[in-house]
Image 1 (tube, helix red, strand yellow):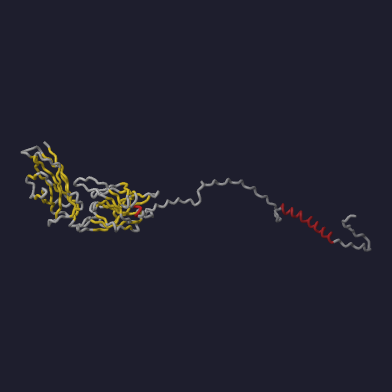
Image 2 (cartoon, helix red, strand yellow):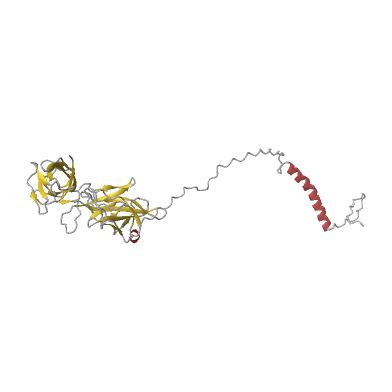
Length: 392
């Protein structure tokens, strides 16, 4: 028997038809669902075809062809900043290390005590110098090169400190150089340069008062005379400042010339050869030229000359009054050269045949107007050895 409900149609006639059947509830619900679906599905299809809102259907535009992606610029690392320069090496060298290292020492001044330069091996701050033969009138050679102290500061403006040390070449007094040392990138000690040295009018340096300021300026006291061994000559001191610029140290402040010091002078003596001519009356005769030069400092009033004649006899009218010392040395007093000028004197000698003489030493001693000796800043260059030779 079918489970579908039977549809009963009304019949004609006056009499009532059979009573209607009570509908089954679930069947009625199912029928309602089917009817609803039957109506809703076509409507949904129509809405989809018409754009979903009852408007006329819209044909979607054709998609534009894809543009090629722009080529990327050359790859650059993000935040590409310059590689920072490596930090400058630390030039602060402990004194004990400096005193037991091989250091390159700059050349010594030509007008002062001489010594070895270039690489020198220090042991406990000292280099012993082998003896050197020095001729009369030449600067002596030091017996030791010493380094006793150091100070520190950024003199070359690289952000790290360098080492400033006085290096001295000595016999009793001597030459002084204030030298700057640094380290290279491998940690080796290198020489930056000489700050100041005892040359010209600067004859002494206060090695205990060297200072380096915040701007890298080196401040040091210098003097016009270096006393030694009980010398009481008055000395003029100045404060000068030096700065590293253009690859070297130059003076950046303070006086550039020494004040007048009536007790100090620099006077130089030079001679030519004494040439003795043909024999005449048992003698050979000749003339010696002696030149005096005033360099700086007080101008002497007079100069005392001393000749170690050794069998030579002064002759002629050019000689002023002479004095003979106990050792046979002949002395005279002459007028000094003009300030920073020269004067030349010529004196004749005779030498007996049969005697031998190869040289004669001449010395100059500058004197004040009162006859007092003046202190020489370079005591070796006021003497000369004249060679004696003969011609026929």
